Length: 441
Image (cartoon, rainbow, N blue to C red; front, side):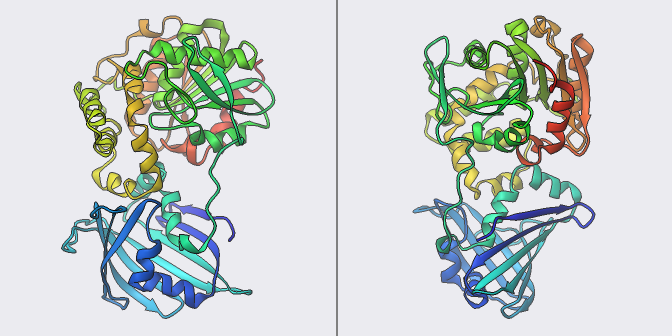
């Protein structure tokens, strides 16, 4: 099997995924057009698929549901075939449905799957998804769903497992001031830069950015406390000071000073740490800190942290994750429905217990009120408050507001960037970090 090739074409409103598989065209075609075969492999690990209808001909219906193994389907979809060429091509219009097969998605996307026979019993699959609008395409891309779509173009039972995206086989460990073990993944050489992940992310979220920064920086990505390989000496509280102490321990490991890069709530933590740690922080890039300082988006409900905590305590982490993505992040409900069938959802649910740290960092900063300059009065490091040019206006308003109230902060719009850029397509971002801070010791 070759690696997954991905291309995004904004002019055609299209995402194209391509992969070569072991197995002849006949076998691969059968895995896409037979109910038993589809149920055996379709969907992410830990989920099962139930096919209610599969009529593979123009005008025919494919209706299926997905849910955790042993449970009833939680998400239903339907597709209407528009073109079928035996052993060669499937085209269909796909969207969300319900258990009855009703069409619940007026913004359906069009999918074409090509089956191309190669030598030595291999098949190349080309999977094209054309979206109804640029906004929906960017929504899918920014949410990190492209990798999930890629799962569809291979029968997982017939192919080896994908390697996990880790930077090293085993992390270095440091101890924070309260004794908490912090797992650190390190690579590269040059000025030290610490990468701080967003809510529900762990160090592998920074894998691509780490790799492109490593030729120019000593890159330290880590699992924030309570995540991945890191412990948490205070599992029932959420003091931002403890997360700042974690970063302080990482700076000791780096030699006494470091640049901080954070994305989303990780940007809030980067600013918090820089304001408290003084000249131990030599630069900051705060990418799309999710503060809400005006009316460019609705404020986050004041009771959301408590409601999410109650869901976690009750063992309903799926409800906690759903509330976070819909109410705090602003993901449309159709997007959350898609996210729930991707492998990432399992990891996100497992980390919902750590959302208390993110909400503690953002306390009072998502109400739609002006930002309090005194919150970061200790910030002396040169800082870039950055937002992607394709991201919602409130990220830019926040970055501009930080630059207006803090003398060491500059606002920058990253051309072509969106909220998922640091994880998905970080090359341009890495170049800007290098240009701004690559020469700093």
